[in-house]
Structures are given as structure tokens and as C-alpha cells.
Length: 135
Image (cartoon, rainbow, N blue to C red):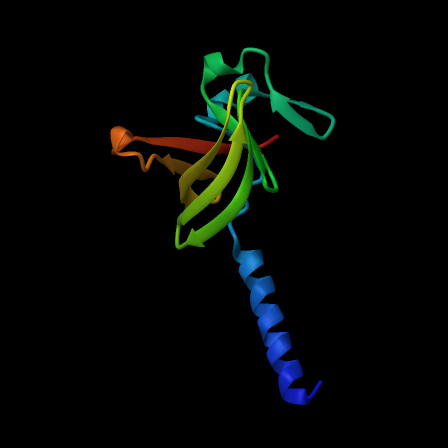
């Protein structure tokens, strides 16, 4: 490998690492209100799960790498595109009764809050804000 090729490869790899390092960290437990975290989630050891009657206290989801789950649905993120403060996801999701492919859009409000935007015209203007729970 000549010096020029090695330098280009180094710059390309460092750009990839920098891009990945700057990606928004979605990992963790997220609830529709920080005051609801203890009612929506429980932690046993290092594992976070949903409390028995969590749906009575608001919504939430748990993100772990490419796996995102709510109380009733599990999704695997197939692709992710982050542009400014918006993240678009393509996910394969499954519940007890069906499997589907879903497009999700989140707006990053700050490091500990995001807003889910519903692109479907039937839900125009609808947003749902989630806050990161410190577990």
C-alpha cells in the first residue's frame, strides 16, 4: 500500500468512527414522562423490563442497540439515518398477532428527550415526547 492510499484509508476510517461517535445514543429506557419511570420500568440486576401494569402509567420503550421494544411490540432497526436533529428508522416489528415493517421518525429535543413524529397523514400534527429514565 502506498503512502497516499494509506492516508486516504486512514481518513476514511476516522471519518466513519467520528460519524458513529456523534450518532445520538438511543439506548436505555424511555417513558412519556420522567415522573412515570418508576411505574413503567423495573430493573433487576442489569436488565430493564416493563413493570406489571406499566401501560396504566403511560407509554414507554426500551432501546438496546438495534433492538427496540415496548410492552407489546418488539422491533429490530434495519436502517437508521440521522440528519440534524431528526432520526429516521426502518424497522421490522412483531407483536403477538402480526409482523410488519415500520418507518419511524424521532426528533431529538435534547440528550434525554425525543419526540416521535407520526408521518401518516391520518395522524398529522401528532407527536409523542419521551424522556430518558435514569435506571
